[in-house]
Length: 455
Image 1 (cartoon, rainbow, N blue to C red):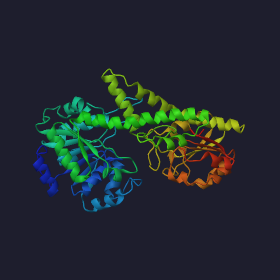
Image 2 (image 1 turned 135 degrees about the vertical axis):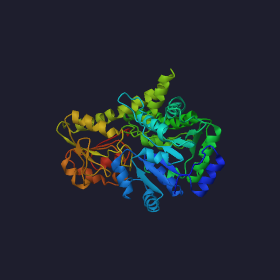
Image 3 (image 1 turned 135 degrees about the horizontal axis):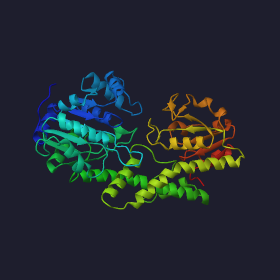
Image 4 (image 1 turned 120 degrees about the horizontal axis):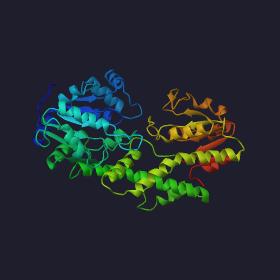
């Protein structure tokens, strides 16, 4: 299907192009969120191209090899839209952008070594859009960004060469992604989305597009920065509350109180939203989102002391895991130095293949600094080099060769493990950071057990 020049500020033209399937879509960044987004647009019948700098990923996709095996429901969609030639991938942004009416940006916004948000990927693409974007195109940013980034930086970068003028022959808005890795198909088709545009008309156009593709509730915001503020507010709420419960959990340990029991009872109150303690908060969202708001606070000479404190607490939780481990070794009069410790789970969250900012990396480094030997088992990272260690291929063969085990990630596989297997370990030390193991069950197996927040 050839490119059609559609005026993306005309609601009537956009609706006609959706109905006739003539609207062409380019998704820049086809990773964890971008690929399912592109597949969703292609599934709706719109010819879609994905752009990514990762050559091996692009080649894999064009060979009809689905890369996100841990995202249920999307593999069938992937093969279907590939076979119908509704979706393809390229490393050439000029090809994808110049032949599309709608450009979606699903690019990473990580932190640098100083915990300052890094928008270099978005800025790089913005400068390329200024060269290759066709007049009357619409750009929608799905990446999570600070309030004001669109208005204060991105628009000026896209219009830098004066070929394009915002609200005249170039249009922009946001629809922040809100999907949970491992549950993206469910979330895309069930959860409400936020919409903000450079003006009210563009907001309505974005709503019509996303309603056509996803059919979910679309909450219209007055502008881009408000939509992004809502996205950050919801995610940082979680980061703060996890910190709150994790800090309580450390105190409850000293009081002999089981945090899990506290939380189960607290859930009975109508306005309590449960969060769980753990070895730390990782991933590409919550830690970064908190630092995005902290960066905004610096720019605006504001104070966000609660967010800052929450980050410090969550970043100290790996140290508490080490304290629990040392305490268990002391109980059995063993030295952690030259012991062998099994790390169960390195993903930052259960049931996904993702180690971005995982607390497991910090725990492993601290154990190595103490002189311990570390081995790793994770069902999503079998027999691969990760954090300088070759991960184990088979869990059953490991227990007799280790002194202790630390459950860092609450994968479903670990919830189904028989406790008797841990009795095969030399020192029988088990540390559970995710509330999987019941303390009484561990005691009945004569394990030296430490459960984070379990009293």
